[in-house]
Length: 317
Length: 301
Image 1 (cartoon, rainbow over the protein chains, first blue to last red):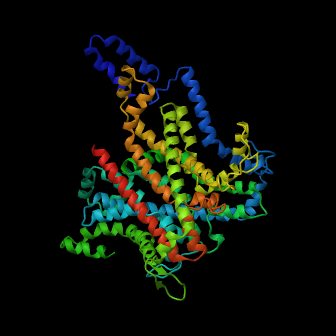
Image 2: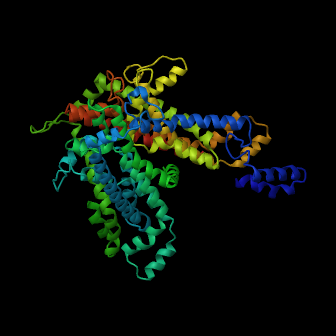
Image 3: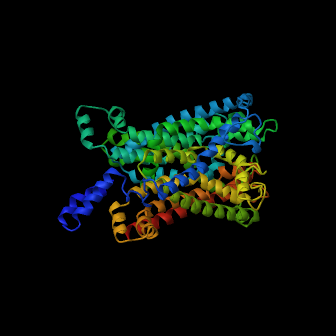
């Protein structure tokens, strides 16, 4: 927006083009500029606008509308694949009741405990690490940074089999984490992405603030808690949302950390519902709705920080 | 952990001040060590053994590797991984690029559109899998099939037919990732100098030429990032396939990780599964390093 608006200021020096370009400048301010988008979309009624609305509707139909089929299927009495549509037939809550009888709320509770505990642990661990990396200089800093980067490049899938052995018998202490929520929570603790993101953000805090606080005799923990953290709220929001969605999306980790199916999270438990011959697809969809809701709520409430986070993560990448 | 104790001593004299950062780093390093690096090391170690519970492991050298890499089911799985990874990455970039071009702008309605279109990304993969299983319902009244019916095409049992199952999985993958790419490409588009568009318009350049010579070069870094992420994601694909088809029908959607999972957890061939994972890890790292290398060179130019 700002670039074309600046033009008329420069234009008067060039006598010939002064008038038309000033007019163009005015136009950019009243109607959205032609040069705002790569395709030069035009907001005035016309072919361009009609085409854009049509394409937008198609995109909505492909990417968003399928979610309506989950909800309507979950609310329908007999949704075999056949009666799937955007509006429920004979709305009923029966599917949710049956899903409840199959223990969906227990799985959901597992998920909530893991998401809550995992996110809390992850934020604490990553904030502490980022604080050390951003606000202190020490020997081996580059190596530590590389180690945290490596955790990002080390997908759970690749280490799944040995990780399941480690979870069954944690070295040194020798406890069996399988079948406990800790088996899922602890491996989620060190997340390289959050460490990187928070480190970059904390680096930008001016050192004058820190020096002033040090003169006042503020200790290390109070410095982090009362001075650095309040300034990090935007980055914490990003790390929180992305962390929650990442944890909620976990599939393999809860699968290998479980001792028996009652330990499953709600997303993994969907497969139990599906393979249960006694329940129909309506019940599976009711489970899907329940598994979908928390990430949906978090996303809608905090989507702005999510999108900035993805963009920031990408450019740092 | 050894570094934790040795580093402060090396600095000498500074005492608590030098220990302090390590106290803050300790939880993260400990968790990463126990739950990331130790399993990685253990996986590499086990890949050289015939793992036999209660009988003791037996060193077999590179046997697991040769066995896994010559197994034709595994070769098929690697082929599927490559087809799926490449197709999904390219498809998601093309679709993401078009979405970004379509939804670029400041209007409120566009922001709402972007929020809605982004939903597949925040939805847990397992939920997406269940959704698409129903959308791919094999009879003519399934959602996708009834849409195809409008176009006069007969119903296809997408997931039950070995010829179509892999493509059906690919379409779902594109659907899941394209909106994510859209956000990154949108961030790239926002950085394009608007005056270039204006200048191009004054030179009477066509829309296609403008896209090709102004927009695309400007968002090349964004595309590079998207490609890296997609390639790595494509190699490690597991949940989508596991939930949607379980590798079937007739192994037609079996990928690297579902095969390794079956080997390790169903067949109890931990050595073989570890060897497969180590190969995958090596390829992933190699790919990351290569792409980063080319990206850096591209930036300098």
